Amino acid sequence: MKILHVITTLSTGGAEHLMVDLVPRLRDAGHEVELCVFNGGRTPFRDELERAGITIHALQAGGNVYNPLNIVRLWRLMRAGKYDIVHTHNTACQLFAAIASLMCNTTLVTTEHSTSNRRRKMSWYKPIDRWMFGRYSKIICISEIAEKSLREYLSMPSDTITTINNGVDVARFAAAKPNEELAAQFQGKHLGMMVAGFRWEKDHTTIIKAYSLLPDRYHLALVGDGAKRPEMEQLAKDLGVAHRVHFLGLRSDIPQLLATADVRIMSSHFEGLSLSSVEGMAAGVLIASDVDGLREVVQGAGVLFEHGDAQGFADAILRLDSDAAYREAVASACRERARGYDIGVMAQGYLQEYEKLRK
Image (cartoon, rainbow, N blue to C red; front, side, top):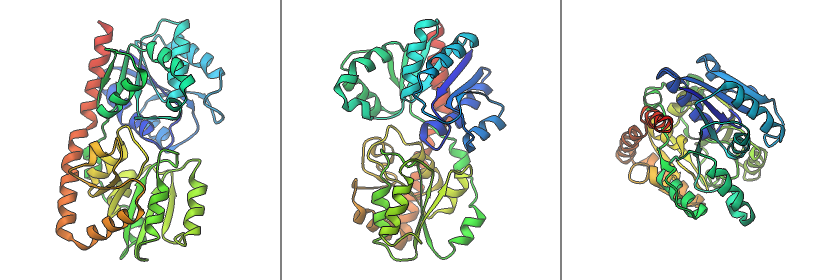
């Protein structure tokens, strides 16, 4: 098959990271797989995919991904590429591919990555979403809670909607060695780490507040970038913890960074199925918000704290740090849970859905 995946950017994020792990595996399974990126600026993820030999089509460099010209650019690519499957991710790609498909005969597949988004709160947008999703031959949700949420939102029965759990390269994270430079920097300190873009659905605020409640030996590393980063940097200064909250920016050595941390953190307002939480569990202890999309993955393995409860998070950190037997039990349970979300299982599920659409 000839397959095109379409995504808005290759910056930090679950869907973006998924491309790094998934696209080369689909290619290695014997298919011709390319990637279209609306904003094709240089990022560690783009560099990694190009090193893997993946062809990347960039529609623009910087600017607004909702630029209407991207409809024409995408249509031209879809028409010229003669793809068997065009698989989209993120809202702009979903909508623009649906519009472009009116002008060319293409089988569309999309992945719904979240349990909620801003447009679902706008009643006037619902008819647009119903039309858009109606253009797709298959809608893949990344978790059962994401599928349930989408079905309730669309208010229409559909046999085109299914669930294939997101996955990561579990072995890569389980076997990673600590980053030596970072380990030396925080020797004798306790290091928590959160890998997430600074976007509205992520709850960095609660975690930074929690570290203001912890003693000075407790440090926090935040990996990623995004529009809300300056606000979080200011919050750390206002709370007097700027010397203990470290903003590491975009990084390509995530497995090594996670291996360096004492605990891994995922604090969100909601998730679809958090790849970062699975990666964190593959590396050891994970602490996460008790919210949709995290609860289903973490409960019974990692540690959940009540959404927005800075003191509850701080208490969880202190217990893990003071009770070695408890900490090791949590780490073992996390690693076992992560093995159920391996990227190989996900890739096979995608290929099976593609084959069904070709029959």
